[in-house]
Image (cartoon, rainbow, N blue to C red):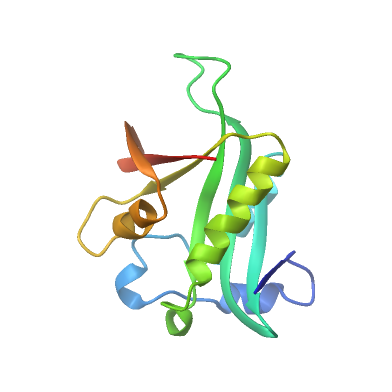
Length: 151
């Protein structure tokens, strides 16, 4: 498994990536993520996930985003912003690989915590993130649960 930058050669394959139909309300499509990566270029870290030559997923991390300037101006956070694993590639460890890769990047820039949010509903990714060691912070972001992992 490896991560690759989005390039003129692979972006169309990235745009065609889709999750299972029952997950479409849980994660934005890759096209929205790429638009956000363009708009928030100073903080977004988008990558494609490959297994050999096969595209199996997309991730986007965020690096050093101020969390809540009203509470704590120095609270800069990094973590997993988006994770899309192709419908036919789920259950093979690609999600775990993606989270570990993001955590490695955060460590490389001196970060000590990784954050993620998830929709708190049946069929959502909460169990996946909890198994990886994330714990709820008690905060919400856009109605989603905020989780943190100490690195």
